[in-house]
Length: 467
Image (cartoon, rainbow, N blue to C red; front, top):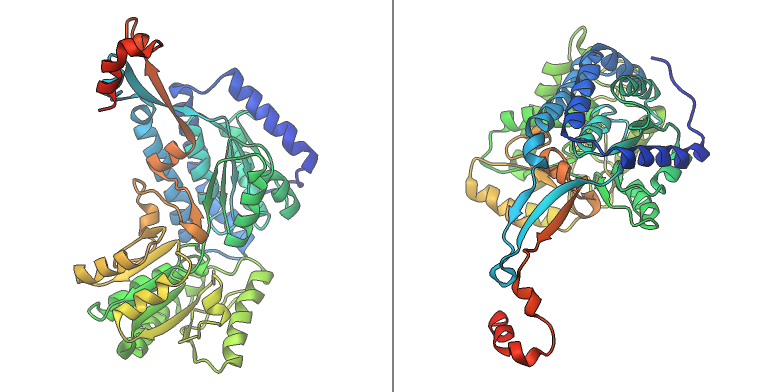
């Protein structure tokens, strides 16, 4: 897939102006929105193999099947959901005006806002670009997309399929590094969706503040798993392994650390070792293991392991993986609170495992930190799960598994606090990228005609209204 030169910063504002002028000239109606989504679906469906190849080339190697699942299936499913519900979500909603405003009637209309900016990351470069883009299109907006500079081949593919699905005054793509990204975030969008790290999210929010641009920030953080004493370890290990090692651990909602009852800590590690060897041992198994996206990220992850070694922490390599930037699944036991592994989002296949004495201790440990993007309680006891949910507020939760709440399209996806703000997916995204326009329709004759001085003559009416 050919790559393209960076977009000159001076072209960003004129492109936004072109998108906005076209939107004002002809706001997309239901027919256009449905047709746009159908063309987008076809353009992606026809390129699934090319998509997987482009992402793999950008990563140095990425599992084809993981790309088909995470960047193909998810997007196609979300487009189907948007198309299936579009008419109902667009329909004006009658609401009660209240007896004090009788005989007026009221309604809420979901109106498009204009041009939505999307800054997408490298880890799921099609999913996290096209789902917010498709949602913005469903809501009747035009879109300006800025993909990550770390996946240039995938960006080339996105350019090609978007040019096939949309005219250039409806969807545009900007390409470039951090300077381009900073200038892009400072544009006066009508809404801006950013997916990335908390540190960069703060910069995006500061840039957007100058324009009072509404934001959806999908950030990261340290998403914990809490394995309760009643939950079978083999099943916990299998589901943690999927959540942690899918995409080489480069997932914003991957389990970032595991808290398990101390008496079973070592047994959980052995169960994880069996999972790793069953999945990645043997000839050809490396094809299913995704590489770390860049040398810089590989060095960052190795730095965590070097720090653990300097601290004398027990480190367990769970399986041997060959290949450049193929960091093996690794467990680090009981890292202290001040270790980088417990301070920073790992975003790789390294899993800290810590033992806890009581469930209350585990809950307090998580609750004392920034609110996570995802939370994974493992227990067959409903009361234990409810204790965890009551004690920890997270962006989203999957109980007795990992990652899957992201794929439930009817659930809003988003963080809270340091893990983000706002939500999208399904109706939540449609609403976020629309303006809920309140409209009050007054009748030809209304009691409000009487609400004028001298008030003494309507004293009884006013006192009845304020009773």
